[in-house]
Image (cartoon, rainbow, N blue to C red; front, side, top):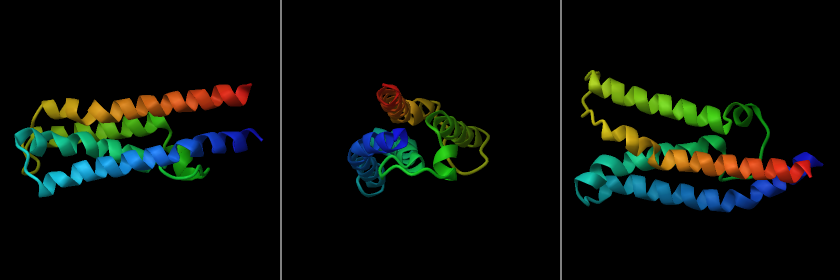
Length: 134
C-alpha cells in the first residue's frame, strides 16, 4: 500500500519534471543555433546540460518505476556522479587533454541549476516519506 501511495504522489510531479526537462533541452540546444553573446555560448549549455541529465537519469519525467537503474541513481548518488564528471571535464580542459578552453566559472555554471533541482528532488522525497509514515 505504501508503495502505491508513493507512486501516486511521485507521478503527480512527473509532468512538471517533463516540462522542465524540455525547457532545459531547448535552452541548452539553442546555444548551437542562436548566438546571444559570449555568456550564452560559454555558460548556457554548462548550466542546462547537467540539470536535464539529472532529470533523465533519475527518471523524474515519467511514472515511477522500481528497477536496478532507479535504485542505483538515488538523488545523492546521481548528483555526486554528475559533479565528479563535471569536475573531470574541467580538469581535462585544464590539462589540455582535448581542444577546449578551461574556465573556472564553469564549476559554478555546472551546479547552478543542478544543485537546486537536486534539493527540490530531495524535498519532494522527504514530503512523500512523511506522508507515507502517517
